[in-house]
Image (tube, rainbow, N blue to C red; front, side, top):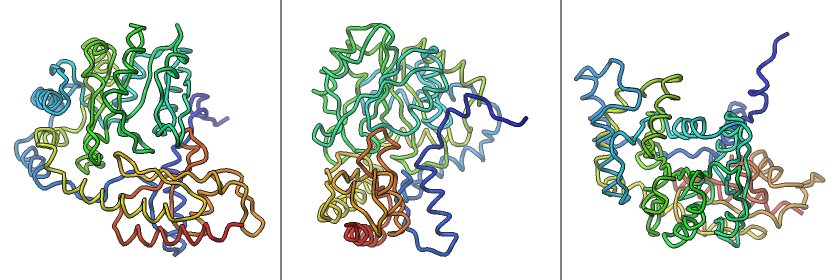
Length: 397
């Protein structure tokens, strides 16, 4: 009998990928679909990074490399952490991986035993919960709301923590909401985290460079919990390098060594040429990619204005990332030609099928009642998408 493993059957296909696949199917039928479902910058990788990669080819970086990454890359990442984040990680505390997704998996598999609890504030990135399943851990979801700016409180965290709590995973700027935790908010959470020394926090900073004026603060910069924090980052979002597949962590040395051991069983070191390119990226000042952030800011303002004018939905101006996480709770219960919108998933599919705008429902991120639209697309595409969305929603009774 042909069947996949029980573990595989427990895993869900990420809805971001599923919705993109559905939009491609519609496009294959000749329909003009505007894709706002995937979180991928529509810029090309900056030339100075591509030049570094070309030099790597010419210099014959074509052999096996250390599992944790080239020493000079880890030194460059160490310098970046000090320069941008006020965090000291030595090269031996850094592990370079094939995308931040692998970095996350490495840490979870290194720390979480079967049955141990992993606290995940919602909304969360779609893969967190699925990766916890791979470790046979148990996800404990903490709900946030539109009114709380999609952020948890210290009281919520304190109530969720118990002797079986092992790890917490969250991002700032957040995907999908764009919320950024302030230094004061993180310090307040740190007071709770510090009460349990065998409890660890994976702080996902992948959208660090894409923020709109609110200062970014790293959780690991708080000395009282430095030994409990694993910082995850990568090049995909801030440097438009999704296809290069390079992420990294900074962590206590014993955790870094554990991730090195896990990674050695899967991929060994990540692509040698991507690593040479990465040295140029992390060594560059953050303002080297400010032109992308400035363009995202223009698109954000357009989306917030246009979507915010549509009756029945509410929009919050995001602090960072490139998503509009739209509250559609008022639309639930309405119908289109007898088809009742029973959930935000129904509304999401309705907008895709009848408005030809792909998106991702809040259920994918653990927070029903919302729909995520990426604004990593041209101004012209976003203007047309907003018209289609408004037209769609106006037809709901």
